[in-house]
Image (cartoon, rainbow, N blue to C red; front, side, top):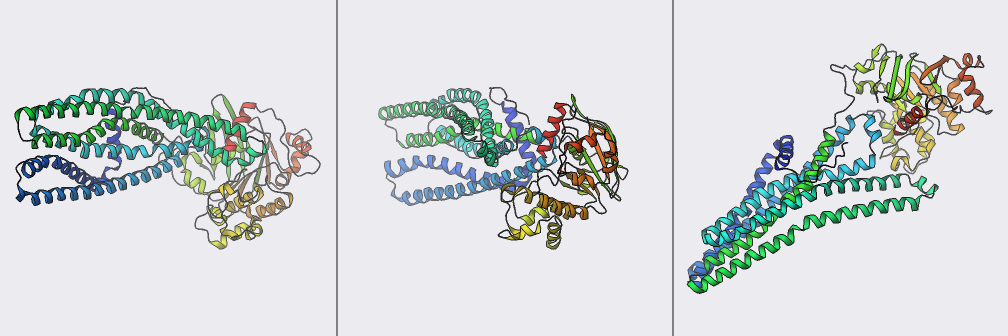
Length: 617
């Protein structure tokens, strides 16, 4: 996501109008009648405010100066009616605008999440999840505030100010001209403050997103924090971010609040000058005081809308920064769209074929070089190799987390780049090396494999994954909440729930990325037998380090330097003592429980890139 700091100058009016126009174009139809109601209420507030100032002339002249007792009831009832209308209108506009604003926030939150789900894995590899969430939470309110301030400033404050100025001009044109002298210096002050506020606001949003993201990561990794006694280090880091956020917030407060004393001083000069001159003129000419009192009332009432209008541009600068940062995210184009005219894949036997596949995470760090092999339908193919050889990259490419640089990947003869990603991934069940569980119960997490799965199917999948026993020992059984990322379960238990999720999917292709790496020997034996049953009739690709998994595979593909070094069965590969596989076998240790990664000749850069991608997944 773009992190442009922008220039320090204030946003030009055309830019503000462009953003407002876009928001209205995208959402206006949904709220047209709500806006009509809000505008009517705001105009009523403005009209009754102006009426309050206008009627002061009759209050002073007719009731107090001329002592017209017959008008007391009429004038009092009229004033009371104006305040009743104003109260109801104020309530109506506040509730209506709040409803619009809350719905806008919810609408954009849904829209942003839907858009994020369309972005490729590469975007999330480059963006810290905690920081992204913090930026969204801070910025989404800018859309609401921008529209709310625009509507209230135009329909309420501007109309109120125009009405009150009209009353002032009707009562005393000369004093009106004197009062309006406050305008030019106030406008100059607003423009000056705008220029200083824009950059400070963007910097504040960014440093707060860093802060919230760092806090979230520290709490999620609390076990590592405590295990490595990182408390003081992280506390200093968080404290530094908090200090930076505090300084930015103080700077914004200093800049934005400078308008208040400027406005108060200018208003004080004008009000004092008007009262002094009006008092001198009244004493020398002897004219009735009603017009002057009405004028002064209008002047005092006009101060609040004038001050709010002066501040609205300052507030808009802050909201504009927020709104633009939201649109910077929404305007990101997904890098991996479906091909034009892409159709749903039709998987029959489930044969997977890699044909001369090349891939690089970045142009100068190639990972795969002309890789070719076939995973036969209904059989198990194991992928082994040193770290950085490209094992997990194959799994990512098969699911189209990334697009290949050359060659083709086919399923039953269908190029996966020409089918819809949704249909492709629905045909695949995936178990990652690092199982991820979502908020909810154990039953909910297994059901994510297939949302229409029945409770009986979920429990059968858990039994096949050797998870049923420990699940039933939980306080609420299958309905036990799993905690954040399954924190209430052990690593092996989380992995078995993840395997159950893959089993219940009933997909023709099964991808296992070191699926038994977190299990103890007994659990692995049970899960391996369950996987043997679950893979019957399914094409299975296994990223394998455990020897027990490799032994049972119908074919073993050995990768080295991003290329296929050799292929065969466990027995045929061991028959050649000089084979890469035989070297892995000798390095595994006497217990025969797992293959140890050898320090292969893969480049260190490719290894780090692949490991980063594996960690993100």
